[in-house]
Image (cartoon, rainbow, N blue to C red; front, side, top):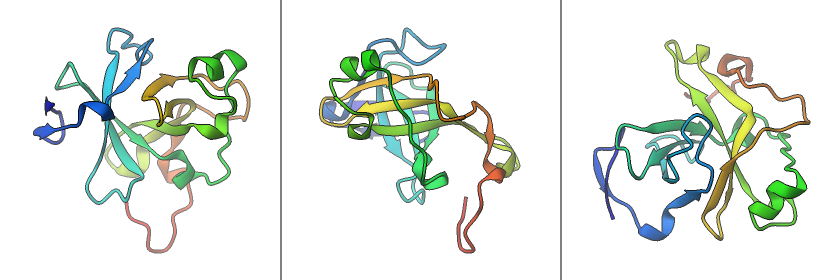
Length: 150
């Protein structure tokens, strides 16, 4: 499928890679279909949820495990059922970001990650009740490796 995007221009996306959000994203409940696209140079940790219907609607996301290797999101039994899995570990997770200048002032939302079942294409944003995660973790608070780049 040909897709107009906010950050990548016009691109081709395989229909089978479309993610379906039955309830949309928080604040964008009417948007049900997205593609998860990697940013060049992001080494798989910096991605974009691009709306399939609205070209200018895209959310920057990060692999939360690249920031916090011990990140351990746990979904409720109802969320697990909706995602068609038995354990949270069967899902992929992504943290939405608010990008600011300078980059160190950007924030990541570890409390409300997007969970993706990469086998079925089902996706949902959840609110974690446990783990002490917050909605506005400063990117600068995460230790940078000597050769890490943003």
